[in-house]
Structures are given as C-alpha cells and as structure tokens.
Length: 139
Image 1 (cartoon, rainbow, N blue to C red):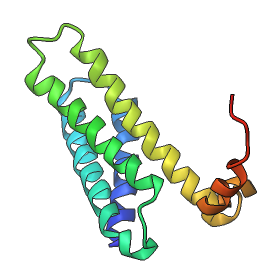
Image 2: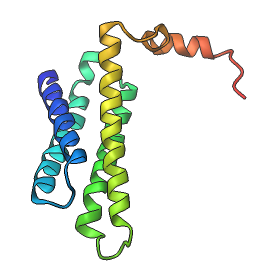
Image 3: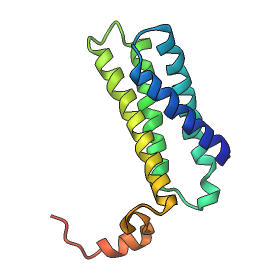
C-alpha cells in the first residue's frame, strides 16, 4: 500500500504543479485537474490503510481528511454552484491551492524528517512533545 500511496502523491504533485502553472478553464486544465483529484483521493484513501504500519493515527491522517474535504469542495464548486455563487472561481482556486500546499508541505516534512534534515523538535516523538509542553505556560 505504501507504493500506491507514494505513486499517487508524486502524480498529484506533478499534475498539481502543471495545473497551477498552465492557463485555467481549458480542456487540459480539466483533464489534469481530474488526474490531480483522482490521485488526491487515492493517496488520502491509501493513508488510512497504512495505519497498521504505524500502529496509531497520526497528524498526517488528519491532513488526509482535510485534503479530502478541500478537494471535494473545490470540485463541487464549479460543478454545482457555478450559477448560484458569484465568486465560485475564487473559492475553487483557494480550496485547490490549499490542498496542493498541504500536499507539498506534508511531503517535504516527511522527506526531510526521513532524511534526517529536520530539527530535533520535529523528529521528537509525540509523547516527548507532550511531556516537554506539559509544564510550559502558553499565553
């Protein structure tokens, strides 16, 4: 399942980058957008089947839920609310860009952590973070 997840993530990153850089509203935009949406559903869905490898839910599962929501709403706007919502295009753009930024940020966080480039606070297990922040005063 990890291979499927990784391939879907790479496909979404490439398709998303092309969609962002190319003209909007064209047939190519819709075709590549469909590839991005399909890859997003695949990598978000496959992340929940990777649960047994970690043994617990992680913050990345919440990001997967967030991206499913963002992409679903971003696709629904042009299809169902184009006539009813005057600024549907701005919302579509925001939602899809937020999902792409979340994908790239999550991927870069995992890649840098796996490579050992992340600061020690990022590599710290969540139990250690809870123990350290338990006595911190947060204003």
